[in-house]
Image (cartoon, rainbow, N blue to C red; front, side, top):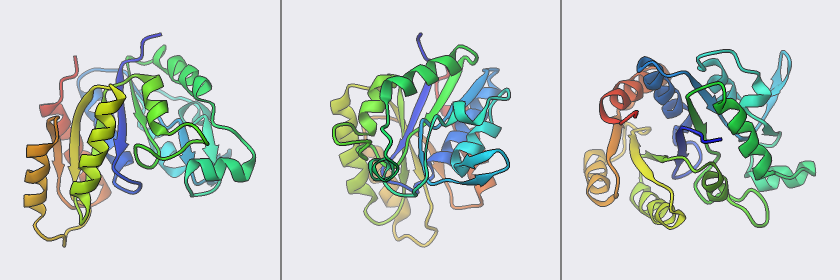
Length: 228
């Protein structure tokens, strides 16, 4: 079935994809949508009351418009906090894109918007042949790119955009996440990307607490992103 929503990716790991995804879910809910989050593949697990969980996926689960089982939000949980193909190899499992696509379709049957959070960066390997890009192409959702504003972000963002363009997926826009409050010339870096990236700047999030980042992302998405 047709899935409506967004695929949230990043220029690297640790750039704030989960907080941005939570803000996007909040903005969608404020527009009256029934929303569920999904993290198809997660690396890094810890024990929870009912089994192993990933903290990012757990937060997406809690932010949904309705209760959804954890294993539906995160159908592929890998124990090691390393690249997915390495964690999968260590555990002797394979990451099956068709099964993940089916899981997303089942969520979409209950929600009118699905926010899918990727793992790592755009070309992180899932196995010997597939990368996150292959998963995003299977889901066929517009992509929102999270860019951490720090040293090296220009090259990372522009290279990721080039790969995104080659994928043929719609590039809905990008988010400037100011993770480092001490980075030099942060405004100039954001402006350089705004002029060069071929998609709108959907949110420019200042340094702050996690709650502030989610709230800022939600507010800016609500005013700048088309939810049609």
